[in-house]
Image (cartoon, rainbow, N blue to C red; front, side):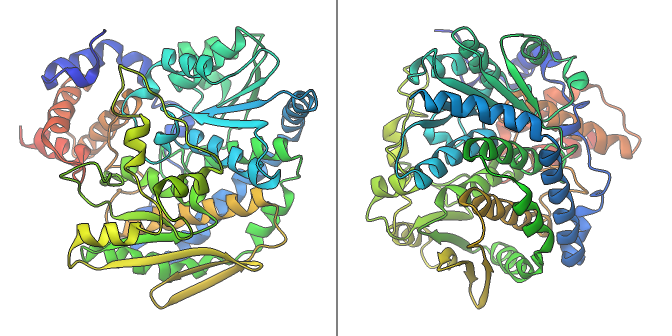
Length: 504
């Protein structure tokens, strides 16, 4: 069996191995990695002017939705392929990694919700369903893993495969798409310009392949640089979902444009204050589990927070937030409520115990989660953040704060996308209030794969350059890997590396 990154203990050896491949992962020129020109003071706005911050984030999200509307011809082509496949009694497979993987699972959930359990649409993601709630470290760096998942998924030549990658360069999604292209004609959805991706060999290989149909959904930089869980994943989900359900995205844009998002302000302030006091939050729902997870799971790698705790870990550390499916009697039922099917895991010998069914069973999101969490927290307070559908309204409650939005006019796809965008705004700004990014840079990013390692190195170089300190890419890489070995999940690799290099 080949040696993996996890097998290497020496940080300098790990850095040297990364540097030998670094050219393939130096993606700073891609727009999805760039700084948005309107959000340079986002961190300050999150602390001092939440109304202006929310107005800005909504403006950028509306622009994202407008971009998808302008791509109507491409969405129509995707819809034609999807429904031609479904009309023949075949299946549509939607695959992604990280945020795009979670949107793939969300689309399957919504299909099952609307079509009463139909299994004609299959969403899956790099690392299997466990990756919905737990990062599978470095999985996305392996195109062969994506290809193997396609081979094991039940995909057949008459089915349609849709690969989704926000940046257009994720190796596991590219590997999966190329594997599908060997058997049929897949679709590839991405959010960077072709000319920018021309320098990334693996991406250009897909873009030049005449056997793969492409849909470019370039939406520009993210509100938080590199955080493709924001506008890029929204665009992908809207385009793929609009094609799948044959709905016009215009009502969602009009709804968001009219919506006063100021009702989020007390929730942002309250949740940030809870964490600042060292207390915890339990998100509770019976209806929106998968959509809440698309935001809360991403907080761990984006802001270097402890991931969701697993009951099987004897030394488990509580995550700042957790999920409770209020109508689920046990963990297995909660997973079925989240996915509307049984979970699918990867029982691969080289990856066990990380993505397997046994590991997944340790994440108990049932109504028992409150008691499990409280036992772990001892006397520390846990606050319930209720997000629920009550009649025609999407309602939120945290402590004394209550708010609701009338959503009965929205298609379920748009309802869940609206909640995704609201939660993205909420979490981005509450993390800004906690100092988890600087300006619009993810200075607390956890470098858990090669793309994020490069991002961390670039941010260190940028922060040092502001002080007229010049350090080579290679030296920063060595220091970053040293800090990755030394530091825990609640510490900033970027800032600690900057401090070490300033003092050297």
